Length: 268
Image 1 (cartoon, one colour):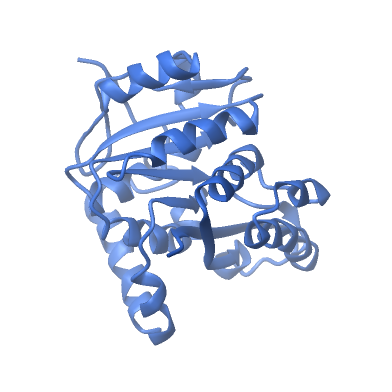
Image 2 (tube, rainbow, N blue to C red):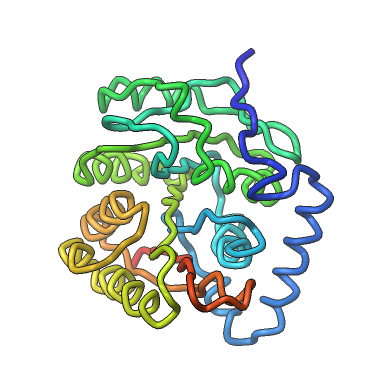
């Protein structure tokens, strides 16, 4: 039985499920203090964007949207993120039997893996799946949705239009959610970072993929663009749930990284 073993446990997030649970409980205690978050937490969504830094920096932001996903009736969650460690042409799907997390393993939806391979001509590049952008979402998914199956997709030099077709295909199934992983700008001072990140967020709110190319420096920009294309096709509306930078945790405003979480909802 093949297992996608953790690659960044103890680095980007605690290796202990107990420690992660304490962090999530802390995030939720902060969320529940804000009455204005109640309406957002009640959103119906199966298409989201999340950050992927260490939990101390972006865990709160990711938790908001993954907590919302937990309230949907889902059987599977597909996590799509950029490759940071290896050059990759196109998209790789993790063809394992299960996915390891500190809360136990998540089953991989093998049938969906085979369908995606067949429908979209993608393969399995094992070295691409020591990837933190996708892995950091899995403990949240196992915590909130212990009975779902998962599929991990990692992309490199890939076409946003092709990934958009995959997202479109996946969202046709009412029991499937798609999680797009990205951080925003990297290592600018906080004013410059907020200026660059505002381009990304404005493009999302307008569902305008072309605006992403006017200065957005998200590391997962290809995935974001794919989601915007799919959202336009599906008639989805974006909701920005949280935006912050690493300075909120570190206090260092000289070199920050930006983070956001976004949910897309079907309009009546």
